[in-house]
Amino acid sequence: MRGTLALSTIAVMAVPAIVWAAPPILPGLWETAVTITSVDMPNAPPSVAKMMRGHKTVMKHCMTPKDVTQGPQEMLKSSKACHFTRYSMAGGHFSSEMVCSQRGMTTTARSDGHFTPVSFEATGSTEMSGPQHMRMTTAVAAHRVGDCH
Image 1: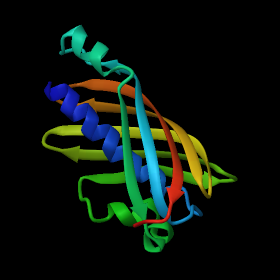
Image 2: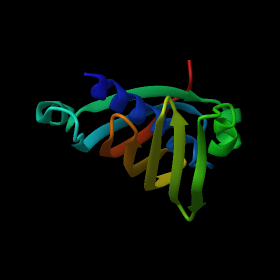
Image 3: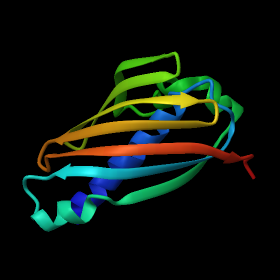
Image 4: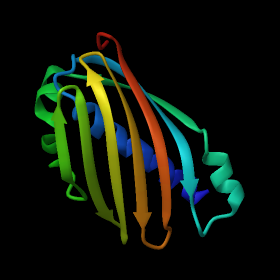
């Protein structure tokens, strides 16, 4: 079960970086769906990975005008655990790699996708090393649903 929690945390951690990586997006309420497409957890029972495959997490987040202009690097400065090792964005496409180190584990999250001012889609891969090694891939889709309330 600890693997499920860690995996969910990784998926949720990756989403804001993708959303903020996509200026010029419009401020407002965004809905993001992250679907786990594959899981490899060598030290866990096969049933755990099977249970996680296909799991979909849907989140809503209010993107303020300030959030939209700051970008992911500025947002992550508040977290000493994470930093970008690669980030590019041009012509409606983005690609990034973020590394986080905490509690004896290193997590590397990579994403590639495309965006418009009101939506984005991406594929991602995450690898966690340390006592609980695992790899997973995800599909992410987000769209602006309206104004923040």
